[in-house]
Image (tube, rainbow, N blue to C red; front, side, top):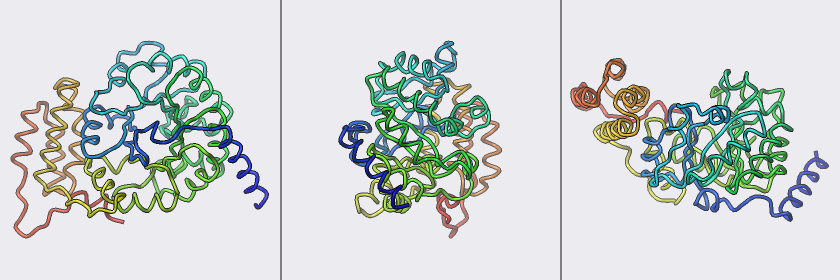
Length: 356
């Protein structure tokens, strides 16, 4: 163990001497960034804008297939779009063909992105079965080739998001991270679970710390950050250079202002009232309709509405009703006519996320 630690330290010293990586601020625009994690079907432009308003330092597009870019898939174009107000924004791509990944990264790099992020952590079967996403953790040399190709193809910083390993028998995050760093990655975001776990159990923050201690590039910690207190804890445990918030932000863009206050040592802001939650829900719906049209926008808002309305009176019936609305007007009417809260019953917003 002593010899292994010495080898890792010697390697880290060599990478620092080579000037590996960039300062975290040059990538994400903040000296300790709090970043919205890319989530397919969740972090569209509408939601990203609201999170930036609440204090999120940087955002990333939903993941985009390199193959889809190559073949000009019509559903891919909207995923590439970013607004001026949400910058700094990165673009996340995924694939297993190193040459294609490099070519497609080059093709899209001039669209105003701050960095190119490579997905090597997605656990979804259809992605993994195609040897993409977290399947690349079983092929570290292929992962390294992908990073090298993308790094050589673009002038932007290149970051990678991955997990602690594929399963308990293949927890190779440290070695994987070192290969990515040596291949040219400028920063690494690590989710504290294996692919086998998906999102079950508790994130292993100590595993992220091992990655942080083994590389010189910035390491962003991800997993189970749902409150300001969580943000302080993950920073303490991992020694990370920034935090990435995923599921804790769903229906809860206010988490970013809470985290900002916690990190700054300021009193935490009041949790939003029920009326404030409804107002934010309707704002996001309006933005979805603006960017996607009413037919698609309202239907894609249904899952968001379920997250926003958690903890409200009659939430289950309300969610069922939301799934029937087809226009912004119907959604506004539904929220205006939601069941009144009985006198004396406290509204505890997102109680299910805050419960330990």
